[in-house]
Amino acid sequence: MKPFVEKASPAPRPGQGPSARRGYRQPLALAAGLAWQWLPPVAIIALALGLWEALVRLAGTPRWLLPPPSAIFQELVARHAMLWQHTLVTLTEVAAGFAVALAVGIGLAIAISSAKVLERAVYPLVVASQTVPIIAIAPLLLIWVGYDLRPKVIVVALISFFPIVVNMVDGLRSVDPDMVNLLRTLGAGRWQVFRKVQIPASLPFLFSGIKVGVAVSVIGAVIGEWVGASEGLGWLMVQSVPRFQTALVFAAIVILSVMGIALFALAAALERALLPWYYTAKREQALEST
Amino acid sequence: MRSADSTARDSGAAPRPPKLQVERLSKSYTMGGVHLPVLDAVSMAVAAGEFVSVIGPSGCGKSTLLNIVAGLEEPTQGTVLLDGAPANDRLGASAYMHQKDLLLPWRSVLDNAVLGLELRGVSRREAHRRAQALLPTFGLAGFEHQYPHALSGGMRQRAAFLRTVLAERPLLLLDEPFGALDALTRAGMQAWLLGLWQSLSKTIVLVTHDVDEALLLSDRVYVMTPRPGQVRTMLEVTLPRPRAYTLTTSHAFAQLRAGLLAMLWREGHEALR
Ligand SMILES: Nc1ncnc2c1ncn2[C@@H]1O[C@H](COP(=O)(O)OP(=O)(O)OP(=O)(O)O)[C@@H](O)[C@H]1O
Ligand SMILES: [Mg+2]
Image (tube, rainbow over all chains, first blue to last red; front, side, top):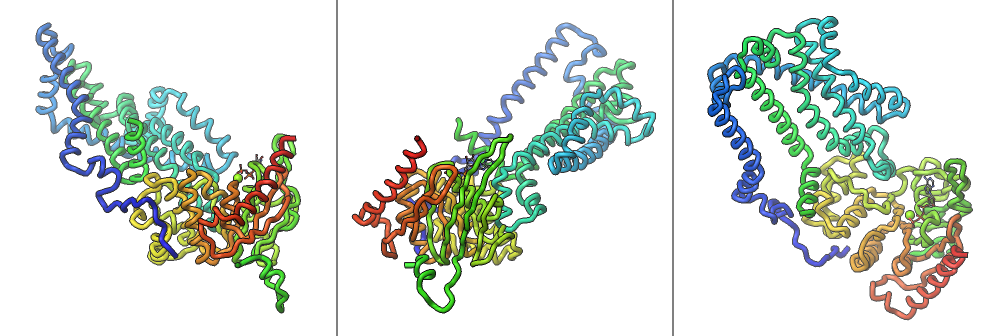
């Protein structure tokens, strides 16, 4: 057997693939890339904060009405122990609720895509569940399950399972039927087709759902705490408003949004680590189109 | 030359049954009450070790024929025989290469290649060993850890073909394996397959639109009519083996090509009538 010879293209060694040629592996280029990515948003935020600080000071706005960023920062530093405690409570609710959403969401998506009957029975209900205002259900949950962690977990799960189900169903449907047939001709059974084709093909979609879901899950926890709680950042906000502790309200908001961003970044990092094939394919496409 | 005749006509003790035989195979689809006959009483036989091409106009049911032989679909009428026995449970009995490369984008070239072995429960190490041994032959050495999206069209096609060969089936069904490639790459791939097949000792059924491809590679060519597809003629390619790509410029080749084109053009005219 003669080896196949093509217009001599040398085999890439590790670290010399197409991405390396574009300079991604070199530390300097990497740093420049990161700076290019992060500089614009950081600059805009810094500018906005500076403007805010200056305007509040110039106009002499009272602190209970609108505290300057510096006062919010002082509040974050001075009361960090108490804030951290409430952060942990809210984070626990988010984590528990999201775990439930993930399990239920993936389970429902698999059920929906596995049989037409189930699709027709379950999918409309999933959609309908999102038309019911969660904020209206939350008080009912207090009556039904009590004041502890559980109603918050349920609210978080209710709000974040939807993007997971919808995206995962799309992912499972996106599978090329010819690919399924290929596996069958290679002797694969239903379970093997599911494990080796349908699940991997749907993972990028699942991660899209996870990124949306994780971002809204923080909102769910805050709603749950507003309706009835004795701790957590949402509860802290409700407590602080009648006392005109406006800076503390802002401090809670800052922590909540940092939490949302961090969770989103975590999901994105996980996606990169677990789906290198998808990540590189996407990047190549993006580079080609520029 | 490995041809059907040597096995079928040599009056030995017990003649070996053909590797693949389809008998009066018909297939029709019904969609929304509309009846669409696609294959009409197609019969063909392929001896073990033979290279047979099926050529015909687009839509005449060539892919449908391979789908049925592979066991992905059932015929409306007729039978498929493998090694002389009716093969009702034939899914997985042959290795099928689709018109599209169908490489799994989340698997490296190597892991795509070993898919068939993996599904049969061959250990990962052993599967990789067998694949590694074939990588240079398939022009994929050094690319085994790349994802498919990083490969050229020709390489993707060779990776898909490696996966087909590594299914380790005696019968290969190839559906326009080079159809999506540019003319230059395609010619290179044809020359390569020509050399490769002579050492593979496989039975191959190749579906193609390309007259040169069919003549260069095959022992025999089945010419099909427009839909509903029937076997119009069978052409013996009387070119000696081993063959080389330079054969395409020979006089004998030109004559065969003229004959085959004439048959195909007749089909074309009939389709227009
Ligand atoms: N599952 C199906 N349902 C309905 N019609 C089908 C189905 N599969 C194929 N057909 C029809 O059968 C006919 C033959 O299709 P087939 O793919 O076998 O043609 P082909 O000869 O392979 O064409 P090409 O050379 O373009 O690949 C086409 O008209 C197609 O629309
Ligand atoms: Mg076809």
